[in-house]
Image 1 (cartoon, rainbow, N blue to C red):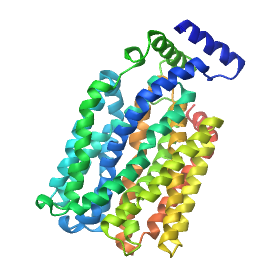
Image 2 (image 1 turned 30 degrees about the horizontal axis):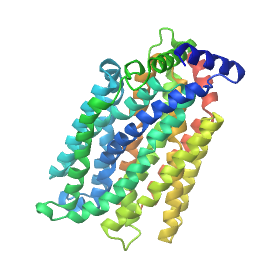
Image 3 (image 1 turned 180 degrees about the vertical axis):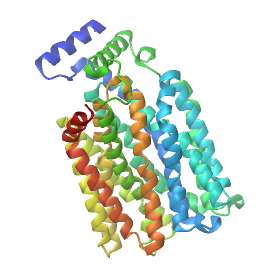
Length: 450
């Protein structure tokens, strides 16, 4: 079957069904793309996220060595997102210019080296500096990968691709819990503390895979030697036609009357989600350690249970969103589930019941990510997708600065996590409202800006 046949089949199929539907031949092409790209992107994101959250496990041991309080540690967790914010939006524009292969290779080598250098931190200030640099180095990866998926998948098929890629988050949580439990027991080997070995061992694979990326990743469909000529032509034409169909593409700048309301809403929505997401993820080992009676390695192992529910939430909710084509309500309901989990945890006196409610939170909060990014990329005009995704990701991830920081401050002041859990629940309820009423809010924002 040649490219014309494929295009003809797609045209016939869309006339018979609904816009955005892909026929069997087209689905085979997209399945081939998914088999090639998604597992590899998944593995890279595992490394990215693991190097971001490994500090949550290291914190079980590094308090005394660096003479940290809870608020000191919370700021160390949070300062990553300042570097992430500053360098997030420019990253996608650089990737558009030099290509994904070169860009992802470069930043992976850099962030892997910085992760390993965290083993050299000998004071609070050096810890802060390295966490800031790590955020700056990682800032280009996630928005770059979301943009990269827009090169290869039409909008209607992109949501599930995003969810499969982002399933690396819970996978990193599971892997982090399993390997951290072993690595933390290496304390004393070659005279290094266990938390130092954790940074060294988790940072090196990023450098290695960054080098592999130079040879493996393909920038665009037209350069894919693993697709036939007909498949490359069909995929390129399908993606290009979708971009051209956006009526709002004419001379679109990042901030205009038409786009500012969308960018503001999506950024605030993502901020509300990430405040709870990273407050939960980065303090989870400490919350579980507070149950009492658990060693550092056992604490790391127990974190695997909520991580499994993260994966379930992402795949179940993304699958439902993909089947129905609905995004807003899926984000809202998932956020409500997560908020309920936080609130229920506060009232649990039995540690294992608290673990159940934390798992409910994990299910809900990571269930939001696939529908959210599918919603976001569908609302943005194609000409501003690159800077728009970067802007939303970097500004929204400032919630990752606020969440862990607030949890650390209130934990030090009150001696428990209750106020922090209430704060994260409130943020998620705000996210649910923003998502559910997004259509009305965007219409009102456009009228105000007119």
